[in-house]
Amino acid sequence: MAGVAGCEGEKLCLSASIRITTDACTSGDSLGCTTQALDFTAILSGLQGFCCTVTRGKCKISTTANAAVAAGTIVAGQQLNVNIGNCGLQRTTGTGAPAKTFACGLLVP
Image (cartoon, rainbow, N blue to C red; front, side, top):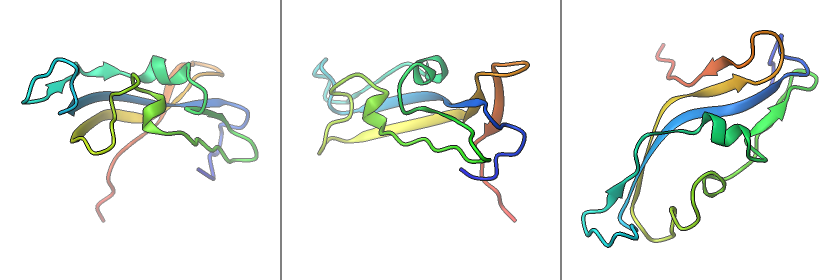
């Protein structure tokens, strides 16, 4: 992301509550299984690639979904539904941290 004014030098981490439903469960349930809604904010901030430091008004996060979930959760060829809520970026450094700096949303003109 570019143009992150007022956050120079601050650490921003992905923040989200995620629920995963898949038909690749180890339980063998043919109807699939659903994880409880997990608050990934603390998990993601501790993983490499899910945070960035704002430098010259820019911050880049580059990772994959498999890096955040247990091995084998996302399997090629299997059905998967991911429900993401309360997502955004959380500032983890500076005055008043932790603080939600940006929230996900849709802009409808």
